[in-house]
Picture 1 (spheres, rainbow, N blue to C red):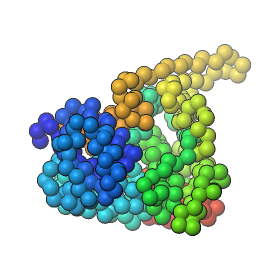
Picture 2 (cartoon, helix red, strand yellow; picture 1 turned 120 degrees about the vertical axis):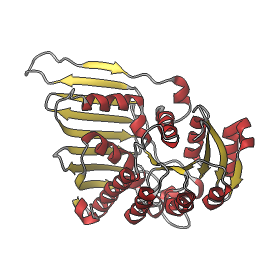
Picture 3 (tube, rainbow, N blue to C red; picture 1 turned 180 degrees about the vertical axis):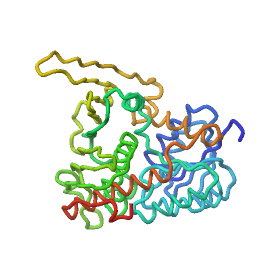
Picture 4 (cartoon, rainbow, N blue to C red; picture 1 turned 45 degrees about the vertical axis):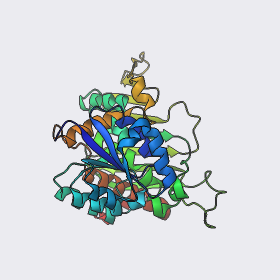
Length: 362
């Protein structure tokens, strides 16, 4: 494929605009098509493109965009519940696809996407931006290099702001989003799989909607999305992982904190501080030997998004795969497994019980 890669976007809301800002600083990327049934969203995307908007044709849906022949690669950033219907004509067109998380809102649809992606000759990539935060990349490299010894415990804390408003308020209901543990937390379940290098065997989640959205009504309905939870995941290799989520803790100094504990040391990474903290084991009452480093991120990259620079670095990897110069690093299978763990957590929180992954066919 030629050096220039022509991009289309399906869905032009908040996340799509972050992709547009990052494509603008990605060498060889040009946006040639936008698809969204909402005119105000298309207008916002054109405003983000600025002068480059003249090069982008607009369409009402993914089918029309797919037939246009204007694109080599498509970013799917439409509402979660639309992914299967949006992806079908794109698979038929044989274009490269970067699909936003979650892959789908049901395991059935996620399996369908994974099956179609396996049959496609074009790259299919699931957008798991958190993998590509520079401090997280360095953090995982240190774990893989054996700095903490053998990994036994992994915990992830995200204390953040409530869900943002979306067009049509679709993200206020489980039926549209897949539920908070799928919509939001698939990022972290993907991270658990990446770090443990194993598969989940059982999940227990205690969660509820206790603070956010209680006074909101949409068509007479009250939102039903979890706003805080603790989730424990047992992995096949014996590693235990835990997710601590609060979506009414936006005053926290760091939004994400990941802690890995091995038989030789503990390792933390703090976002957005960018610090990696190494705490080796020491004899009782001996002086601690904590080491701290800060992984800096290019300010231009930081300004292009809200995911600590990760969207930019993800795009450099994706465009390499589109050009045939690098592998797909986040597969449809990865996306399927993240949805499956998230769905197990949703079931667990609702039914107040442990869910075996075998119950879901994994």
